[in-house]
Structure formats: structure tokens, C-alpha cells
Length: 168
Image 1 (cartoon, helix red, strand yellow):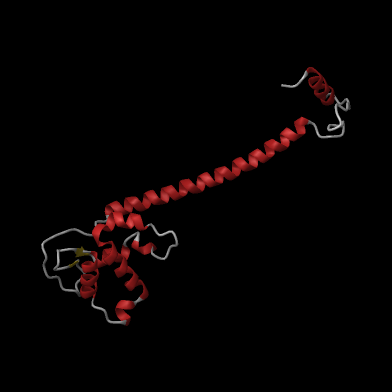
Image 2 (cartoon, rainbow, N blue to C red):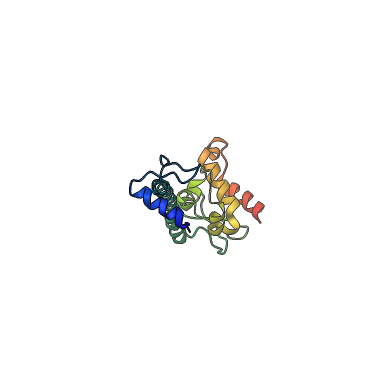
């Protein structure tokens, strides 16, 4: 899109001839080739930065997929007929209200409940795994994490019954 005069001056400039073509361009000003090389360098830097961001996004997605796979392996709750389970046992704790099951060992090792101290906590992912029991499970994990069960001698069964009643 250069005029014939401009093409001639660019050709003369490339061959080492110093020709002033206007008040704005002197023979000492950088050629369009040098400017385009600088623009390419800037473009390369921007492309490298964009590639770093893309790599970070891919790593984050892979981590989320890993957590989702772990989550699929874990069945945190189910509904069964209510029966009495000794609170001191290592088995699941079953509530009388509606037969909700709380596997306390599983709640201690749950991939989402172990991340409650993170700023960008995946609460909606926890909702997908915990369902109707999200409040009681999250509160159980928080109380357990900060030692409130021991400090105030809160019985686990009563605690879970209370928070599950709030959920219902």
C-alpha cells in the first residue's frame, strides 16, 4: 500500500542510500525494517507470557480433574434405615432422624474438606459431593480442625444431630 515514490525511497534506504523523504522521516531515522523487528520482539515476549498463562491454566484444570476423580471415589453419605452405632467405634455414625451416615474417618480425609483454609475454597464442588449434608460436614470439619470438640467436650453425635436438624 506504498506509493511508487515511497517504494523507491524504501528501496534506496535498504541499499544504503540516505534519502530524506519528508520532514517526519530523515535518512537518520530507523527504517521500517528495524521497527518491525522491534515489534516482532515485543510480540514474542507477549506470546511467551501468554504461553505461561496458558500453562498455568492447564495445570489448574489438571489439578481440578484430579480432585474430581478422587471425589468420585468417595461416597460420603447415603440413606439407610437408622440403627445405633457406638460413637467410640471407627465405623460410620448413623443419625436417628433420617438415617444419614457420617463416616468420620472419611470426613477427616475428604479432599475438599481438607482445603477449608484456602482462600478460593471450592464450596460448590463440596456441595456436589455432600449434597444435603454440606452444613453438618463442613461444620464438623471446622470444629475438628480448630479443636473445639476437645476444648468444649462436645459429643460428636449430638453435634451432628444438631447441625443435621438445621440442614433439614
